[in-house]
Every structure is written in structure tokens, then in C-alpha cells.
Image (tube, rainbow, N blue to C red; front, side, top):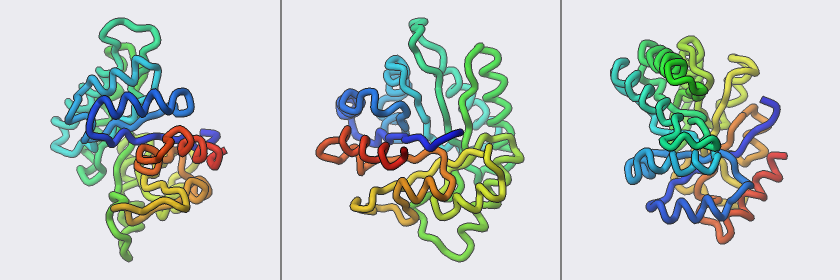
Length: 238
């Protein structure tokens, strides 16, 4: 991937809030994260609304269960790539998360299920990235070692990349190569509040450490002008 890309997290309470935000951001943002809050409230409708607008959806549900259950969940997620109305502008599901703490067998089951379901449906396979250690977890002496261990496991299991903080990104990039994706949450412009995040970074800092995708939530969605906030971050990315 030639340059880092911005993902805006739709961590809002209602669909009305989400739709206003999507309209406000317009063509400035291509990828949106749908996490547990939005998906629990709205279900597949939230992803399909974005897909119908041609937006890329990062489905961040962090699947973590026995291998068979996760494989079934991934198959259902891949099925979201099929337009219910045969809309030619409908975007396939772009990326989803599983939790690396589930172990290699579970990760392999997820990767295989995605491949098989995408082939069966004739759709593009979504990228699968493994969550390593949440960025709300404070760093200690073993954090980087644990993240690297889980990142290696993800690659061995056939995943496309991992979700990791900027503090581990450089080590992952050095250890696992240029083709392994790194999604970095906890991105905060220099003037923004940290909120409940512990291991954070500015957009510039994350890019310098090797991140491919930068996930930004509150600094954009709570801004007086979300579009202006997004454009400022995009300018830093460029």
C-alpha cells in the first residue's frame, strides 16, 4: 500500500447521528468503521447504508469464540458484500476484525471461512485483521512482546494484518514485512484529548512508524466541524 488511509469510527448512539456525519464528511472520507455500538443498535442496516453509498466498511466486531462459531460469524460478515437490491454501486465489505487471543486454530478458521464464502458468493474477500492488545490498555514491559507474538500468529494463520498501537507498529513492520497491514487506532491530533486511550499517536507519528490505516473517532465526530477536522488529518497524512 502506497500511503496511509483514514478510517472514521462511527462510534455514535443513533443512526440519525451517523447519517448526518456521513453526509457532512461527504467524499472526503472513503472508509468508515462500524463497531459494536453501531452494529448492536442497527445491525446490518448500518453497514448496508454505507455500502449503498459506495463507502468502504471496516466491520470491527472483534470475533473471539470457538473456531466453528467464529468461522460462521465470518461467513455471515462476508455475506454482507451481497447487495440486497442488486445495486451496481454497492461496495463489498472492506475489512473485518477477529481477536488474536482466540488462538491459531480460530484465526485459521476465520481466514479459511472468508476465502470459501467469498468464492461461493462471487464477491471480493474482505481483509481480515487481528486485534492484538487494545489501545486502552496501559503499556508495560511485556506489551510489545505480546503484540509481536500475536502479530506473528496472525500472519502464520493467513490474516492480512493486525490492529496495533503506534508503539508497536515499527517493530511489527520490521519483523513481518511491508505487505502485512497495520491498522492503528488511538489516533489523536496533537491538540486533542486522550479520553480513555493510553497508547496513542498523532497521524504523522503513526505513518512514520509504518501504519497503513489510521482509525480516528472522537477528534472528528465530536468536532465542531467534522469535515474540517477530517480534512486537517488528511492533509497531515499527505
